[in-house]
Image 1 (cartoon, one colour):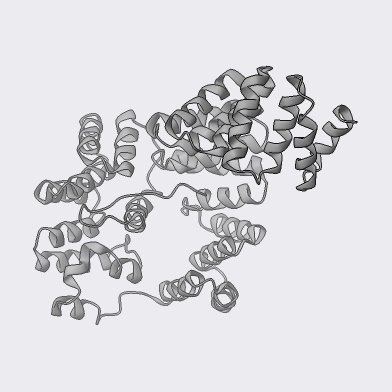
Image 2: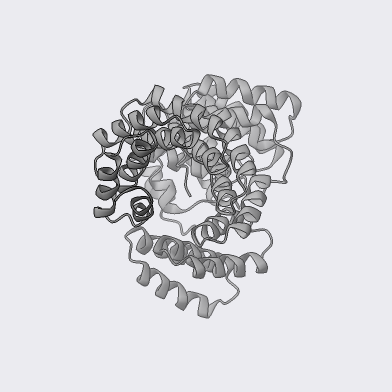
Length: 414
C-alpha cells in the first residue's frame, strides 16, 4: 500500500488525524461514475493532500467551472475552505453538494457547523448522516476531531442513545476492534461465525479480507475480496484492496489490472499510481512504471523517496542518465542519505565513471558501514578503476553474508 493521506483542520496537526479525515472523504467517492480526470481536479486533490488549502480551493473552483454537476467537487472545495477557516463558504459548498445528491455531504455539514460554533445544527446533520446510505462507523465519528467540542454536550449524549447500526455493521465494528489490536485470529474466528449465519454477507466477507491483509495472509485476502466483489459488483473499493493483496502476493499482472480499475474509479488517489508502478516493475515493465511515477511526482515533486524509486526503475531499465538525474536531485535535497549515495554510486559504476562511483560508494559506507551490497559495489568500482584494494571490500561484503560478492572475488582476486 502504501501512501498515507494527509488532511487536517488547522488546529489539529497530527498526521494520523489528517490521514483519517482524508480516508473519510475519499471513501464516499469509490462508487462514482468514472470520468476522465480533470487536470484541476487532480491538482486540487494534490494540494489538499499537502495542506495547501488556498491553492486547493482555487483548483477545485476551476474544475467546477467546467463541471458544476459533480457533487464531490463541491465537497472537496468545501473541505479546503473549511480547513482554511472559511466555514460560511464551506457550508455553501456542502449544501450545493446535497442539492446534487441528497445527504452526501451531511457529515461535512455537521463538521462545518461544529467548527463554526453551531452545535445544534451540527447534531441535526449528524443525525441526518446516520440515517443516510453514506453512514460511516460509530468509532470513526466519535474519533473525528471536528466533534471534540460536542462530546460533552447533552445533545451528543442523546444522539448516541439511539441504535443507529444494524447487526452486520456492529459485527464489522467488533472485528475492527480485534484487528486494530492485532488480535487477528479472534477477528477472523468472530467473522467466520457471522458469515456462517449470513453466507451472502458481502460486507462481512470484505471485512474478513481486510483482516487477512493485516495478518499478512494475502492469498486468503484475495479470495475474500474476489468472492465479495463477484457477488456485489457495486463494491468498487475492492479493486484497490485486492490490487494491494495481489501486489504483496507477487501477482503483478492481476495487481496492475485492479489498480487500473481503481484509478478509473478515482484518479485523485495518488498512492494508486505508486502501487501500480510497483506492480509494473514487478513484471519488469519499466516504461509504464516510470510513467506512473512521473505523474505522481508532477504533483508531489518533493517526495524524495518516490523520486528515488523512479530512479531505481530507470536503473533497472538501463537508462542510467535519467537514473542519475533522479539520484542527483535526491542528494541535492538530502546530502547525508547513504541510500542515495549508494544508488548514484552503483549507477556511475554502470556508466564506467569509476572514480565518481568510488567516491559515492565510499561516502555511502561512511554513513552506513553495515550494507554488504555497498561493500560489493565499492570493491568492484575500486578494481575497475585499477585499485587492487577492491578485493578487501569484496571480501568484507562476503563476510557479511553477500553471496553475490563471491563471483567478483573469483573473477578478480587471487
